[in-house]
Image (cartoon, rainbow, N blue to C red):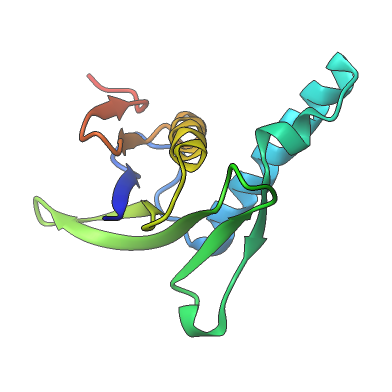
Length: 139
């Protein structure tokens, strides 16, 4: 059974809206950051930290894309965007889905990516286990 996590752009977040290109930019920024870390450490950390390629399918119709693993430990993570109504306001979100057949490595990496994106966007992150992490400034 597939599992989902949500990164919600609530009041106080760094962005007020995001689309699939914005999510791809965040993932490419993550890959760039771990690549720079690898240079400092003197090894190819980027491949170990982001063992995926970004792929789209024609039937996705700009609603989702997926990360395809480059080795047997990692298979797929699906990303999509949308909006939901909450207290009469539209709340944009990023949905991260672990499809059937995803590995433990996929889940660990998806958790890491959700936290990283949530921290960068100062968002509210509802993890796969149902717990919520608030990276947004709250009063």
